[in-house]
Image 1 (tube, rainbow, N blue to C red):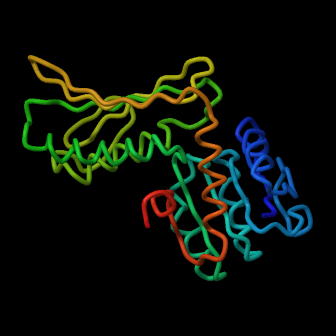
Image 2 (image 1 turned 90 degrees about the vertical axis):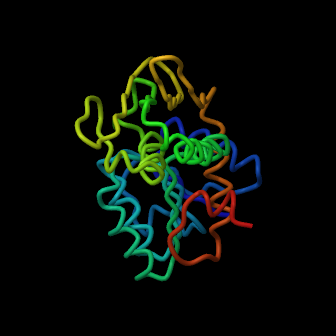
Length: 234
């Protein structure tokens, strides 16, 4: 494949290394707004940039009929617009709050546990995420996906909120510590005990590999997808 990397920070460099070792060609490494000229006619775009510019980056790619894999979080209030653009241009868009295989297994486990725990109101649920101090958005996209999985399976909640909550809001607590790739914890605590599930990333390689696998998978497809389509739809 010919891959254009839009957002060439730490993740972009790791994706570059993994994709190159898998035999793919990186035809663009961009930290500026993509254009038809500087994208260099790729087969697919992998976008890991910043929340402020992600929408425009993705839009440009889709409007040039290039499928886009996006791992940028913090811009999802406009995701429905992007999905409409993908359909209008007869191309493909795939968003993942986290491309790690382990995290996506964690998502499935989280939903199963939420369904089991919904009948035990004596257990209070708490969701916590820890990331490196360079991460600009809070809570993380992964934490939001976990919260949505709980809300879908437990009618005690109808929305999530950062930090303190009221009524039927599920709280997400976001901490920032030096060079932590990502830790997510969901706990159920009662007066007598506590049950906890946790995912800890040791580095960014799992995220990068998942993004490259998603890019390989999306070639020739049309429509809007998630990482679940790549990992679990057989």
